[in-house]
Image (cartoon, rainbow, N blue to C red; front, side, top):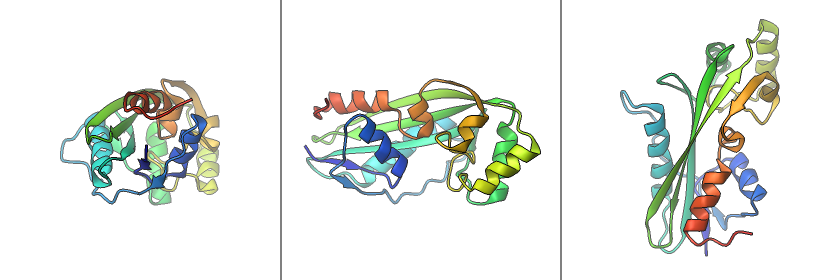
Length: 188
């Protein structure tokens, strides 16, 4: 059974390897990732995962796609592309809780799409200016939703995670494994 991962994320490949899954192909989806006007974070994450899977769908193959969103209330925090964007996101998250929504879509060999959503709560400590400057200087924020990567230095800034740690990293393994099993993918 051929499995295609619709993602360029090395983190998603690493996470899949933790459950013994090595995709046969990695095909990043080229889609417009702009949120729709008024779109809520969970709906956005689901739509992105489904669109990524559909963009690389191949008859007879399984296609796995995911999208992870950092949400402060109803606000979707962007993937930080500048230090200023990362700083703004981290200042917003400092000393408060936020949600991380990780949606997964699997298109099975018959072309049916199945979806799962993992919702986690992450609580950041109040960040001092020194901590913020040190984190930004390390550069881990680039391209990361909300300006942080929990699997790196930011983990030391997180007081608590309630939910799926792998979902916060970018691929909720419990939900992913359930989708693969339901599609008949061989898992150990």
